[in-house]
Image (tube, rainbow, N blue to C red; front, side):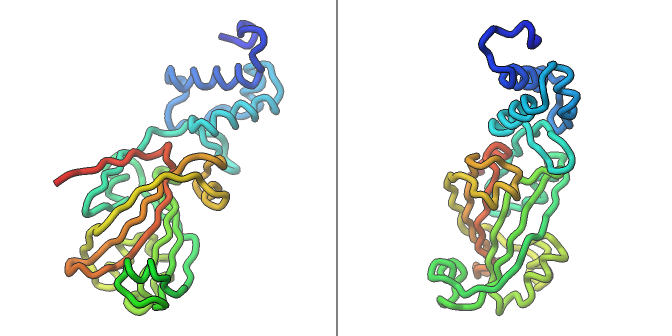
Length: 242
């Protein structure tokens, strides 16, 4: 249906959004594909660029498209099936789905363990910790933002190591730990804050799945405790029994 054929009273931006949505649904715009530029869309629908921007913003709010700064607007890919198991590795999960995993280092700092963090890591309150902030991506699409805490005494210079290897599995391997497992996982729902919205390329107000977890070594000693915020529209968690 063209703009001219649309029912009277329907806002132009809504008609443009509906047209692009139909294009996504019928496969004219494939998952992960870059949409035409604003000027081309404006010419196609015979509207101004402000109308196009509002239409694209609406589609982004609904999780159908994603704007990448300096690059353009892309059709969102399908949700990643993300199994929750005793050995959960982001790179393996994403790679198994045929997508390219990547880690992006944000920051590392030191802090004292709060009572809650000390309990999770088996340390005394006030013990020195390393805090690492990172983003995990699949095919350039940010999937989750993670805050990870480790003992500064057990993992000296962990922030510098992670900045080089961009992987928690490789980080602990650097300290001689070749295997570890998930000891606990807790999932809650939330709304993305301004900082994470920027890091995840999400509109403010979009839902996130918050995963708090603790990993232990083969002797059951805590290694890391983590809070990961997943873009809810980009993953589906699979709880595997046994």
